[in-house]
Amino acid sequence: MHTPTSIPDGTVFARTACSEVGVDPSVGNVPHLVFHWQGKTLAPLHRAPWVEDNSFPEDMPPVDRKLSGDFVCAPFGLSDVEPSPPHGWSSNSAWSLESDNEDGLHFTLDKAVLGARLTKHARPAPDAPLLYQAHTIDGGSGGLTFAHHPMMRVAGGARLFTSPKRLAVTPDVPIVEGRHALQNGVATADHTAIPATQGGTIDVMRLPIADGNEDFVALVEAEESELGWTAVIREAFDDIVFVLKDPSVLPLTMLWHSNGGREDAPWSGRHRNVLGIEDGIAAGAAGHKAALGETVFSKAGVPTVLSLAEGKTYRIAHVIGAVPRPAGWYAVSNVTIDGDVLSIHEANGGTMDMPFDPNFFGRLA
Image (cartoon, rainbow, N blue to C red; front, side, top):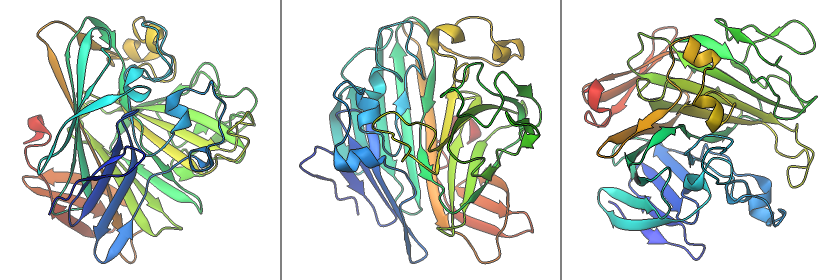
């Protein structure tokens, strides 16, 4: 049964028998996500250490001060078109709680983004270890980048599996100069062999990819994909964490490999073994302004912005889930939705099924 509560820091909760979600209205992030499934309790998402000890500089943007769980970026990355902190007002300013009921939590962003109204709907599944999130963008004008930003802990090693991708692109400029394992400015069809700064290649599907590094790579969904998915088998936690998207809306899956490469406070080399799975529509790490022009993505026919207009509404659907790893499972070969059943498929033929809302991804129903 849904039992919403609030705690003193303002986080608003919704709980079901299988899933718990907490949303912090001050920045709109999801600092709390817990699943109960097959007798196990799973809390897969990451929270930065300075959030716990309150040790951050006063001028640090709110999105980084409260770096936790998942949040939405509108725009994604550098906000150099309409002035706002990195990742936009959607992750740096207040969301008003509009309703809190059996259908989950509903919020509206207090600030407009390029003149558009943004809403958030977070709904824990009653019968499966899933968080359904849907954001709407109403009206406005201009081109807007957008992405989800879930982060998970991968200490102890992990293996990453995805729906088919056709292009992998690394940034022209590194996140931290001299602390990147992947070469800059790479565009390749093989994300399992990306040129490394020290020579040779790196398979970004095997974690960690390096030590003391900050790396970013954007993967472009294959044109035939109907369901975009990413699954992570985490060795130390013996679980599978997965995210789902509609690739016709969010064509990129951007991977942030953060493993001790930032030395400035409050990162101080202690932000380690973190993987961000950032499904979005953007020009990778290049920023909002760059996404409005010609990029390696646009040359490949990949859209990089949502085209806002009065009377036009985008609905952006996204799912986060986690399950205990079944005995003997080594690799995820596919994730499928068939009606009201979500199935995770193992490379050797095993399958795990769970209930799924057949109407959530509208075009896949």
